[in-house]
Image (cartoon, helix red, strand yellow):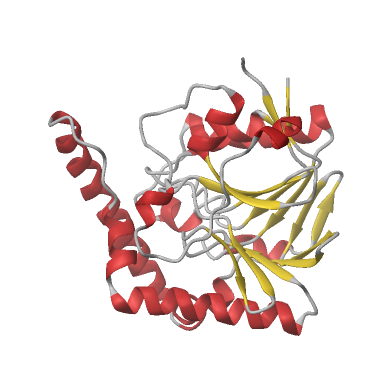
Amino acid sequence: MKTKLRIKTLFMSDVHLGMADSKAVQAAHLIRHCKCEKLVLNGDIIDVWALKSSGRWTQEHTHFVRTVLKKMEKEGTEVIYLRGNHDDILEKFLPFKLAGLSLVDEHIHESPHGRYLVVHGDGFDHVTTNHVWLAKVGAVGYEALLRLNRAYNAWLRWRNKEAFSLSRWVKMKVKNVVSFVGRYEEQLQKLAQWKGCNGIICGHIHTPANKMIESTHYLNSGDWVESMTVVVEHLDRTFEVLSYHDFCRLTGRQPKGSDPSLNVSDIGDKPLALPAPASADQEHLLAA
């Protein structure tokens, strides 16, 4: 039976509307069939960098925006949009509030477990902050890698084999990348402590995570280019990193598109603390 996922808050980042590899259809599908009080779009939802180069805006990207607007209009969902580095053009308008929509640089999410600092996280990427031109070159290289990956996966499908993520493999295997992710997480944990917060929710590095770093709860919502993951705050106020695949399984819905979302087994030895699948005790979180 098809249901909607009833949750308190949905945190989504890095949809990259404007990129060819944006999973806008799947992201909109998840938002449409989630019933939440607050939707936090945590940066890089629109990829202005891509649109200025080889990217293009499609009907699917417009549908995503309409889905968010309908969420505000029909369900009264509060929408908070944080600027990222790929949509940094919004910075000149911050802060901005119109009806149920807020554009901000950072957000404090209140929880029974304490205060959670919500930031995109690009401020702790020294390449993004100090060498924007190099970050843009890297973005072009990333898009080229994704194009190569599409061709490679088409060949794998022709041979009846599972899809493979080159960029995810690089993140797991290249020592400098693993080291960067570790430093990034530690710096954000220190920022949360400095701000007097018990946790931090971020995006930017396309590496979903749910774990404790010392006494700080660190959550990263991942992305909608490859991993297709979000952070959800359930009605019982617990947090979870949820993949699109698991969302479809929980709500009895057929996944859109042919690209698989992140599975725990895809991470390999990368430390990622994803909660266990929903138990029978969590069935009250689902409603028609």
